[in-house]
Image (cartoon, rainbow over all chains, first blue to last red; front, side, top):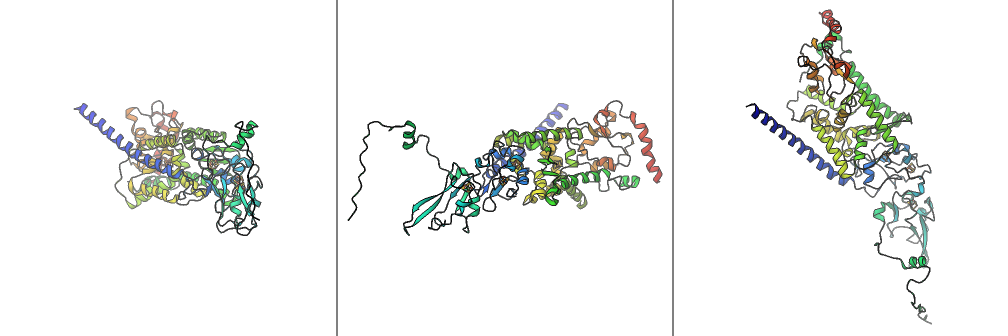
Length: 248
Length: 305
Ligand code: SF4
Ligand code: SF4
Ligand code: SF4
Ligand code: SF4
């Protein structure tokens, strides 16, 4: 009799445990799936300087807001739960207010966890994103004007962004194309913020969205040749270039 | 639920003395909030940050060990300040009783206490059966999730940090999660959140498993079985062993880590049975030290009648 009672109690205990485990398991599954959604940072949101790549950042940032507090230009904000950014994590929107590139990088210094990597000590080495001239149809310089605003506001003018001269087939004048160089651009967003259009033609995008990647087996002949210091294949005859005769 | 819990004590000792720990607790909860808000609202930056990490007067770091543990599980090694802050908090709550965090600091406690009060006022009956151990399962689940996803997943929905961060940095739709917690406690189950589900509370109960500061039923021989203490206790299960354990050789100190050290039982007992004590006072014959206080607490009803 007593043994039976004990067995029944034990069974009930197992059932209860299974119930709780199932419930919590479901909750965990739901939260886990939600995590995958919340882990995708929308392209308009830029992380502060030194931020580790997502999703490492989401494992490191404890949502304390110290970086937000110590940013002297108040550009940072913590995401609200309804935003498509992981709740409580810091971000800024370049079009509303770009990173002013503080030399002492107070946001990184304030971060207690290293979600903003303390190894970043030179602000020009930060890689918050990559500016891209995304719209060649509305950019005023592409239309042949000399707006140049994005170029002029860049803290790394002539390094991160240059004006490349091109022939304008429409007016026979020159076009000066703002051209961003990914090895120098910090993603501060000053260019996007300053763009005079209603909607910016130049934008800071997450690097992985903005950057292509060559296959690992690609070799650039001219670079290889420079490395070797002589023609890569010996004995290739360099024929004279033939230029068509110009019509009289 | 008993509605007039504490009425007897009010008659015996007056309103103020029957609410002193409750008032102290609310004062503490709002003072913590006020310290964090003095900066953003009035420009006095005494404390920066929020409950997950705060820097006091620019020198003292305090960090929530639970969120940091998730970060560790997610594979990140935090910088020194966060680790120091978490260590200080661990020691502090170990000493003060782990779940003192719940009773004296956590902003959600005000919400769930309000829900509990309203539940009694409205006479809401019926309560979903939840196991008190569910919180440990959820605690384990949040850590496992951090490990698997490599992110601090729980922070996406945690009502505790949602509310505290929201008040300081802007609430947004965080209200919805807080409101859900309130409604859960109001309609679904009595003390559902803090008493059964919250992994933050579960974490701090582990921290305080061996805390020296405890509530004790020091004068339990005086108990007149009015059950007021059970009615006000956020974790009523913790009281019985200490209060009624004399015959089974159980000491008077409430040793359960679920006790939040809120002191509400001390407030409402008309017989002055409870008092703050240390866990070390649990030794020896529990009735032995009852003599002197017993005579003192017996005076009150006599004066009144
Ligand atoms: S570098 Fe300066 S402006 Fe930019 S986010 Fe950090 S604190 Fe703000
Ligand atoms: S200071 Fe660091 S941990 Fe805190 S919110 Fe900013 S990035 Fe996250
Ligand atoms: S984001 Fe724009 S302004 Fe900033 S460094 Fe890059 S090109 Fe220059
Ligand atoms: S159980 Fe959770 S929500 Fe309730 S008071 Fe404790 S930490 Fe706060």
